[in-house]
Length: 158
Image 1 (cartoon, helix red, strand yellow):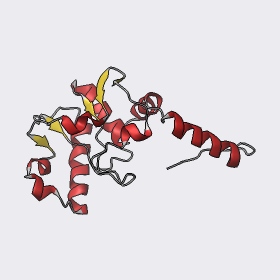
Image 2 (tube, rainbow, N blue to C red):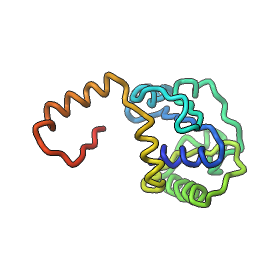
Image 3 (spheres, one colour):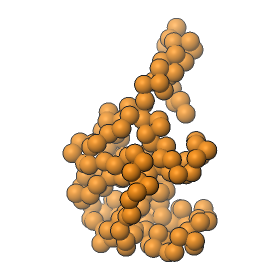
Image 4 (cartoon, helix red, strand yellow):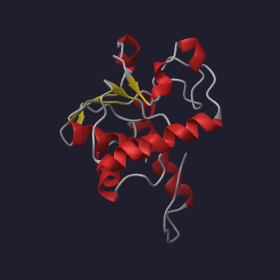
């Protein structure tokens, strides 16, 4: 949902979308962007330019940043308490729902925006990103082994 909300904001405001999933709890290497580990690379999503590979390690994102928390010195941002994450979620939601842009050069969407984007944005994201072939093969094998003989409503694999 957060990716869909960020994509919709980028589309509406003419910004680029950077998918920076470094520091993922799903990888042991903190400076590796998890997105290209799990999904095929994409250059754009419905006209929005996308950077989603390890080029994020070579980029310097220009300030000022929104939400304001991200304007602090790096050392001050090492620990983000839950209350801060909830505040960021709320100000991002307000910005995205306002249909306005931000004066900030970089908008950081690093809070769970569950159910805070429209269904069309969700559909566009799910149509546009595809699991890597080896991951898709494993999903297909699990489906054949555990699901194929049964009627299914849906499945969430993580």
